Image 1 (spheres, rainbow, N blue to C red):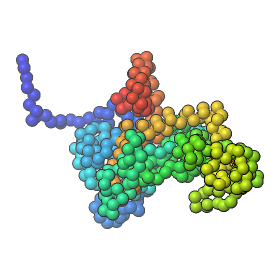
Image 2 (cartoon, protein in one colour; image 1 turned 30 degrees about the horizontal axis):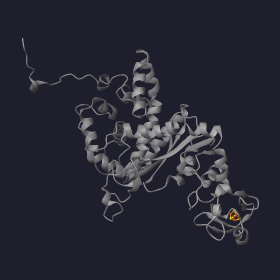
Image 3 (cartoon, helix red, strand yellow; image 1 turned 135 degrees about the vertical axis):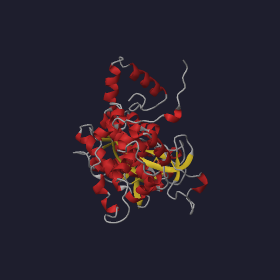
Image 4 (cartoon, protein in one colour; image 1 turned 120 degrees about the horizontal axis):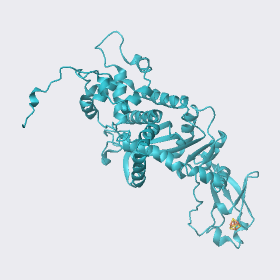
Length: 439
Ligand code: SF4
């Protein structure tokens, strides 16, 4: 007999505890196990009036909602609250009953203004500390790099006095185009890919200057400074090599090819031998180029050959079109020479090969699954909050042991799911550490 359900009369009279409805292996259950938000109330106590006003939403609930947002990459708080309304696991995670009215989405935005970024920074710092206590962080090799985040701003409004996002600046994005946005400078541990420190800047800030302060931040979480820091060619300079050497750290960053302003017609700096003791260069003809002045603001020194030497030199057509040869070099030129020499060793190449899978994997994961590709809010401070949240979530995921769980679940089917996933992920260049569909 055919029947038709009367949808108007669906009503639930008896409800089991909400927790019993959440699957044992749900990722929010595993997040709950590694999450410690005991510091939240104390951390934001002075942001609330203690003896006046309406009762607030529990600040821990606010942080939990933001964690859901970062975990599942939900860009807008309106959408987040719509999802929380109908998602049992989300409700359980924030501790709200099914019949309880949820906070309004505007409460989250107000809370963000009230909290500032300190509490999110503490959440991130604690996630690193927990990874260290769990023995996840090896700390011998760190990777430094930067990634761009597209700002929620029209191209024509960048830098305008009435711009809705006055902090966003043009930067180069991976598709080769220039767009308004921000940059997240990141340092991550090699083996565990735990994010050890971040800095957020407008997208026009060059990453070169951020490396040493970032590594200093990360080193505070380690017993001793790392042995090596790997970074791409944007960080390769005599100054960075010098700064890291002072800290007892080896910089593994491929130095740029030596060039001069006349293309391939004339000798580059590499044809000249630097005598550090006398602070002079010896040219290919065996003549001396003396130091004539230092341009402190540009951080470079000028060396010059003698007119009489250059005038009669048989190598002059290969050396200079001028009366005499000038060399303009960084004040850290001797460090750059050492970096160039080191870059030819096999150990340097071996370490550098670890860079892309580690740090690029972290960025791919953050953008693919956690919404770091676009800024959720406007302004540098709020983008920083987003970056801190996403970085904290990445670290919490390492703690959740996604790899282990996936492995144990796939053992039952001979690792078939993992193999299929890895094949798909490598073909489309995705990170493989987090698959909501399998986890
Ligand atoms: S042109 Fe002057 S600097 Fe160049 S190789 Fe000859 S002597 Fe040396």
